[in-house]
Amino acid sequence: MGLGGAKGDVGNTGSQGPPGPQGPPGALRSNWKQCVFKSLSDGKDTGLIKDCIFKKKADNTSLRVFWSGTLRIHNCHGCCRRWYFTFNGAECSAPAAIDGVVYMVHGNGGKKDLLRVRQIEGVCEKVQKGTVRVGFWVGNCAGYGSADAHTGWSSVSRIYVEEVPPPQP
Image (tube, rainbow, N blue to C red; front, side):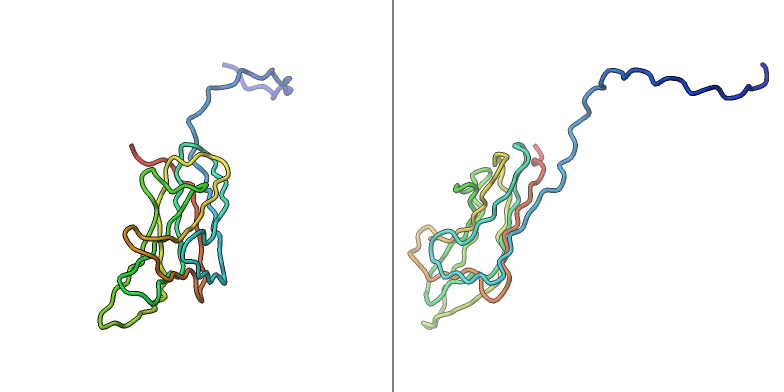
């Protein structure tokens, strides 16, 4: 064993080796959007209230959506309205529709007019990647006639859309 010598010159760079094996799929990076409506006051009883255009990145993910805003029905007894989400014009079928109802019944013949902030939320699976038009609609409740509906009033309303990883098996 001799003593260490002086450091030598830097050598030439070698050729690039073959590519390594592909790694495991990465986690979904956060992908979300909210559409905010500052002065929404829609008296529509049936039809599209608002929509929010979202770019979904993968086929195997799901979309979590929620509505937060004022909903009401007015001047009726034993009446109901249904608010619901659509994805490119169709209601969610996997696992089920994302909806909420407002039902009103009262005693002594009084007509109530309650405006309340409400949240409707759910996750829709099997929505294909690409541009997705998330719509928020109002319509009839099954078994009930028409009622005077109102969406949004004197507060901020929003549709929130988030792409989430697939559910557990």
